[in-house]
Length: 192
Image (cartoon, rainbow, N blue to C red; front, top):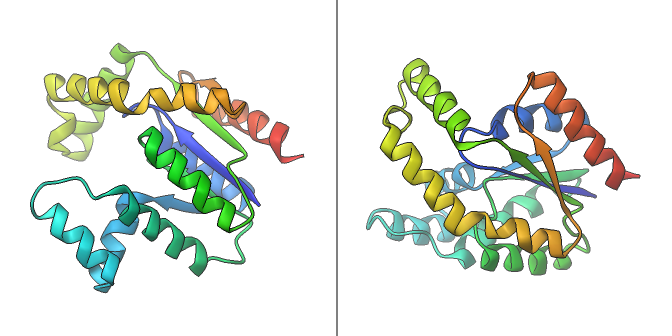
């Protein structure tokens, strides 16, 4: 089973590249935002628990998110692998994910880190904000605050996965196809 994490700051191109990777390697996409919405809409026990936190404006606890990931993986038991997009976001989530994957007799094969400078990301997100209407992408101060959050909470995962020998940094500036080619070269190294 081929399990990947796509990693990078907001605006790095994770969504665009995830779609291409999914098509190339026939993987199932795990986006915790999508899982939260699906569980809430289905009225599952986990969805109800998650909603209790969401309506208070609090973060959904890691064990609830991991439970949702576990349920999704169980529902896709014949999958060739998974790509995790936007998860894990913290080291405790990464540790919980590693333990959960052991239950499935699998692990993360590689972590693909899209590397893009902050000023370039601000330009990308501002453009996305104006073309998509996303309000959170239209204010430079909000965008830069998201980068600080990313650097404080999520960037330590780079060290965590480097320590496991799984992190591969990929330049996230250039043509979409060129970036994709570089990502597939990284994936093919661990897939063999």
